[in-house]
Image 1 (cartoon, rainbow, N blue to C red):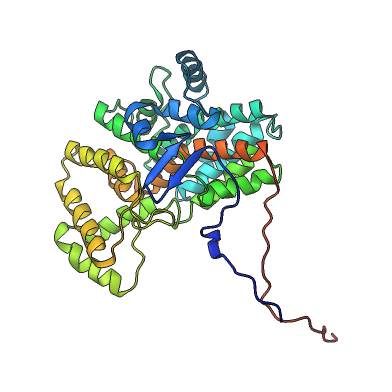
Image 2: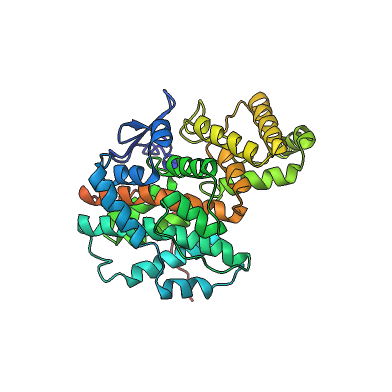
Length: 373
């Protein structure tokens, strides 16, 4: 009898391809975008520059950035049928379903959707980058019974996103914290949704289909939905005084506590210190010392009892919450950021494509005779 092959559930630790887009190094606790440390990009560069870097492999020249910014601002407004597709959905629809549907309509509108020429895919990537903020902002507003706010071409990406969501110009420190979050969420190697996008691209389907599939993967609470779960956890806890008892009960029930641990990082998520610094500034800006105390108590408790460190979702959740984003909007914000990484990976996959088709080891019943009817 032959020896059973080793199975790698979840492909944990299995290299499946090369990538030049980002490098996650758990040994040194670093994340690089095209060779640049992500914390340096978050501190010094706009999200528009980071998007360009992920797509092209180099930071833009001033002339390239100006041209990209002009194009992005001119493409922000949603087509009438994209807006109708959102309006036709129940306000109770999961926001990720709304985003997925709107992206499908954008793709259906594109006469060159199935053209996988690199220049066409760059054009599509930039279009989705420009339009996702309007989709995310409008869906939150319609759930609140508020009208759509048209984009402004005199505001940069982050300022316009906040304007379309809240109808007022955000203070500079809020803009900065939001921009930092967009940069930190932009790319993270072969995570579940990115790998999903690459699987679809490997079939030579179109970029929009890859993105729609990735949105479906990101919707899952073990991936993108974790930042929403963080705020629900704080809602359950209620006050800082309740943290210890809540944690003891959760651990006794063997409940999974979202916002902690990571499949790749074992010594802490390299993005957390940067996002945490922005979170602290936001909690101070909005005068929420109670939320900071809960955050620190739960972090300390998880470290003491389970030796598990936070991931990016843990500080991102409170940051988005105090800015005014509904909890249900957190994962769509993730989409608006990760569209840069997803589309970069789709283009990288197509540049050296091989159909992704793993094997499965059958463990069902042996061949048997079909009984007579």
